Amino acid sequence: MKVKQLKPRLQGLAPRVAILKTDHDTRRRQQQAWRKWYYTARWKRLRWQCLERDLFTCQLCGRIEPEASKLVADHKVRHLGDPAKFWNLGNLQCLCKPCHDGAKQRAEYRDTVARRVGGL
Ligand SMILES: [Zn+2]
Image (cartoon, rainbow, N blue to C red):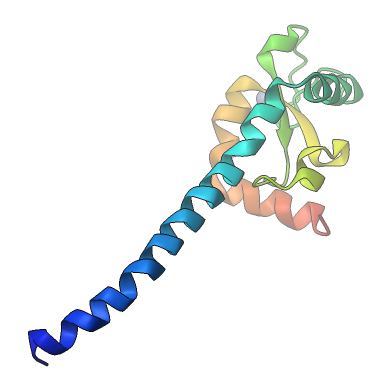
């Protein structure tokens, strides 16, 4: 194909590329929106409910941690910005920080939990 023939095609493509870029930016903003949910009073309440329900006990290693700041209310099934999963006490478990930062990151563990929780 000659360059002369190619050029009109590229011009026709440009507006479409611009639309794609906008969509991508919008999508990224939406994906990030959940980050501020962690700073809301609602989340702090929900997190506390989770820690109390699980008696400040790590659901992975069984360690009882009286220092709440060392505990994490962890989403069993990753919420990926889905409010229904994020704000669901049934989808939360109390984990100690070492477990949350370590074992929890393993894909194998995630798969196990995802299977167990199933329906969510
Ligand atoms: Zn633990």
